[in-house]
Length: 226
Image (cartoon, rainbow, N blue to C red; front, side, top):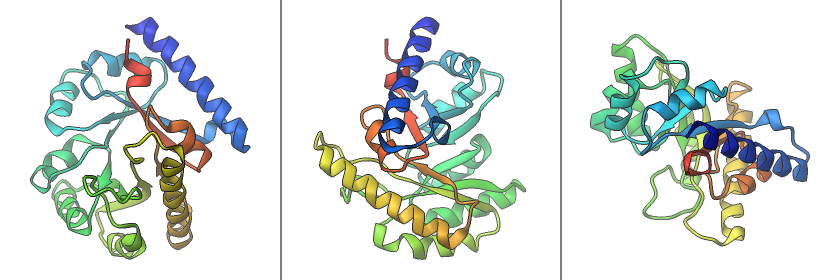
């Protein structure tokens, strides 16, 4: 498993480099979140040994079981949908919650963070593909929601997250990422340089995401599949 992961990581990094070269970006502008959903806790240790310091999980229970069995050497990101009734556990388990998809959820996270006397780093998830089955704020409401979240004392809002549309149509994927990048630039102008993370792109579309401005890609199967 370890050698296969090392080979996969080398290939992913080459693909990142080529995508960056196409649009005149630098490789160090792109962070990898290694998504370990559905893989054993041991892969987290393999990933961190290869200097991948951002680990993504989708589900609270799965993350809770894994994290309890390993020594923490990474920053843990929640990237899956967060139900309000699980916010307390999410705040205790994770370092970053990327999937804040509403002002209501942000307020709940803020209250739970206050109870634990911590500042919770968050991204606003935006539904830039306009797909009904996807979670995320309406792009038209993005800036207004951001302004409201900024008033919450126990949240540190540092970026946006989106998921590309479920399609093989590159034009549709690219348009979705273009929209999120536009919102990111507008948000950064409002908030400042601390707003620095644009999380978009997964194993099947991360090169397009990089070309459209992503600073953080969430990679699972391209790293861990055998």
